Amino acid sequence: MLNIPKIVENFPKLRQSNEIHADAPGGTQVPESVINAISHYLIHQNANLGAAFRTSKESDQTLLNAGITVQALLNARSNSEIIFGNNMTSLTFHISRSIGNTLQAGDRILLSKLDHEANISPWQLMARDKKCEVDFVEIDAETCTFNKADLERKLSKKPKLFAFTACSNATGTLNDIPKLTKLGHDAGAIVYVDAVHYTPHKLIDVIQWDCDFLACSAYKFFGPHVGILYGKESLLNNLQPYKVRPAADSNPGKWMTGTQNHEGIAGTTAAIDYLASLSGANNSTSKRTQLEQAFNKIEEHEKTLSACFLEGIRKLDGIEIVGLKDLENINQRVATFALTSKKVPANIMAKELALTGIFAYSGNFYAKTLMETLGYEGKGGVLRIGFVHYNDLNQVEVILDELKRILSSE
Image 1 (tube, rainbow, N blue to C red):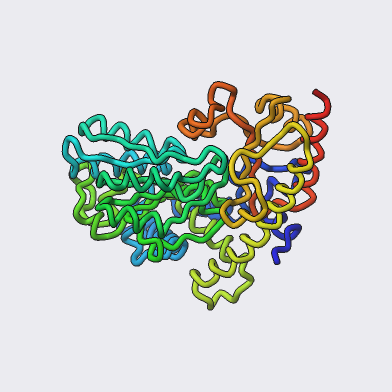
Image 2 (spheres, rainbow, N blue to C red; image 1 turned 30 degrees about the vertical axis):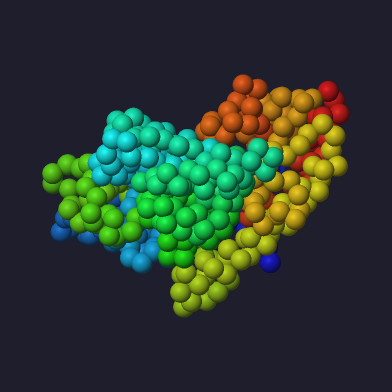
C-alpha cells in the first residue's frame, strides 16, 4: 500500500500547509523532483534544438528522453508516435484540421455528451468547415454512462470519426475504451480518445485499447502544463499537418508546431519518473513494469477513498452524487465526484469549503454539453470533489464533516 505521509513529503505545496486539495481534477500538485527538473533544464541546458553546441545537443536529448518516457506511460510502439504541444485542447484543434482534410461534405462524426469541450468543439468546428454532420451519443442521466441503444444507432450511420472520453472529468465515469474502440473501428471510424482525466488514476495501454489517437495533459498527472498526443504511426505518416516549410517532415517533429516548452517537457519526464517510483521497484526494472506496479497501488488507494466518500455522502441529507453513486459500481468510476444540493448552490458550497482550507471547484469544468444535458448549466453547475493518490482517508472525513455543517446551516 502507499505510504501517504511519505508521499506528501514529495510535494512542497502539500507539506507546507494543512490545506486539503480536493481540486486535482482541475490540475494536480507537483512533486519537488518535477520542479527540480524544470529548474535544471533552464539553468543548465536552455537552448533551442539542432545545433552543434552542448546545450542544444542536451536539449535534443531531453526531448528524445521525454518521448521514450511517455512511450512507456502510454505503452506506445514507438516514441515517434508521441507528440508534445501546449495542451490537449491545442493538440486536438491541430490534429482535427488534418483529419478534416480527409473528409467530405456529408460525412458524419460521432461525439459524446459526456466529454470535456476540448473533445467536442474542435470536431464541431472542423465539421462546420467541412460541411460534415455531427451526432452525439446520448447518456443515461441517472448513471452518466453511454446509452447503449443510442450508441448502436449512431454507429450504424457509419461515422468517419468517433471521439469520446476515457473518463469524465466532471462525474468520474469510466468508459470501456477497448470495447468502444472496436465498435468505432467496426463502423469504419477513426477513434480519438481524450484520456486527460484518466491518466492520473489508471494506466493507459494504447496497444490494448487499439485507439488511433489519444490525448492527455501532464499537469493532470503531477507535471507541468504540457499537452501530449499519441497517434498510430501509420496515420501520422499519411495525414498532412499544418506546419511551416522548414519544419521536419517526419514524425513526431512534423506535428510539433514551433519551439516546444522544453523545460515543461523535462518536467513531464520527471512526473512520469515520480509515478514509476511509487512502485518501489529497482531501477533495473523496466519503466513500464514500474508504472504497472505503481498504478496498481494508486488504484487500490483511490478505491478506498471512493468507498469512504460514497458511504459518507449517503448519510448526508440534502446532497447527492450526480452519476454512479453505488458501491457496487466503484470499478466503473474514479475518485472524482459531482455533487448537487437543493439546499445550497454549488458555488456557495465551494466558497464555504474554501473558507476552511478545502479546495474544490464548482461550475461545469468545461463539460458544458454534459451540464446542459443534465439540466445543471443554468443552475451554476455542480460541486466537484476529486481525490488522487496524495489524499488520505482523514481528508475525506474532514470534507464530509464540512459538507454536513454547510448543509445543516441552511
